[in-house]
Amino acid sequence: MFPLRRVAILGVGMMGGSLGKALLKRDLAVEVIGYDADPAAVQLARQVGAVTHAAATAAEAVAAAELVVLAVPVQAACRLLREMAPYLSPGCLVTDLCSTKAAVTKAAEEALPAAAAFVGGHPMAGSEKTGVLAAEADLFENAIYILTGTASAELTAMQDLVWRLGGLPVVMTPEQHDRQVAAISHLPHLTAAVLVQTVAGLGETAELLSLAGGGFRDSTRIALGCPRMWKDICLSNRDNLLTMLDMFADRLSEVRQLVAQADAAGLLAYFAAAREVRQQVPLRGKGLLPLLYNLFVFVPDRPGLIGEVTGLLGEGGINIAEIELLRVREKTGGPLRLGFVTAAARDAAAEILQTAGLRVERQEE
Image (cartoon, rainbow, N blue to C red; front, side):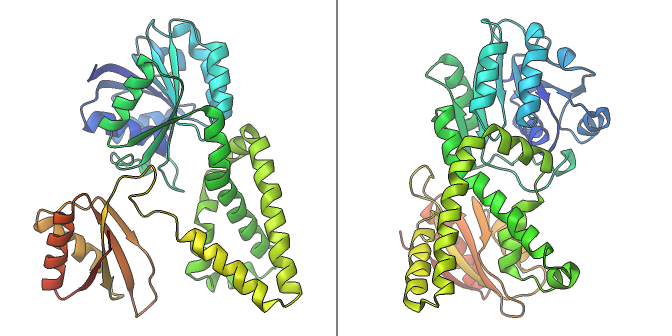
């Protein structure tokens, strides 16, 4: 099957551009045809190597394509499914990168001809950055990539593609997907936006934001996401989001009452329970995530040190599968978590870094 002769990507922003770069870098496609409602965007995508050719229309892009990828917000994806359907080649596989699945799956069932197949897709990757200049060829490396659909040759083909992109395919129904991401993805974005708006409503916004530390920055980073995309997410997953918002409002009311009553014991129990649940979020090695061998490196707060750490391991021929700065304070530093595919790689990295004078700790397995 690979390399695919012709892939069409409709929407060449950060996600679509990253997929195009990944397909070309890994020799999974010979031609990647890009289309975007903004002609300048698709020309820029060609310049940065996210696509090989630019199409002026969606119909031109999908003609003779073996794989068509909808990398646009949900409502635009539903519209494009109707527009491009008459121009799809027999046997074409259509997928998407949308953050909700039920609406786009229903639109595909209604619009696509019998000779074309649809498998929903949602890579759990990306950032608050937008535009093809933010595209990364390795964006999908080690990322969970949700696929929706029933057992079929097309679903198997998409699983194979995700593996080749370096991702971790997970199959579920569209309804299951939308219910779960409403809790762990969509609700956090709404709470981040509400937190920002709450602070903005206090006045003196510039002065307040100048005092913002890690807590506010970490809690609100995702509020930088594309407003148009999040508007579509809210509308297309409205019922699940309303359920989650009602639950969140109940929990918020509970903690408000504890504060109002100055209930020290209640507050302590509330925060302890929340802390216990938060500690269950896997670094790696639980549930759907593959096992990684973690090494914690305690780094001082000085410019360029993280680059020095990765450079030392690169020189030693050791590949880092995952990297995360867990906490840092000015002048005191904090732990850097490095994840490795094997225990041997972790132990070799520990030896190199200890020799360089850094304190390290291995995570217990």
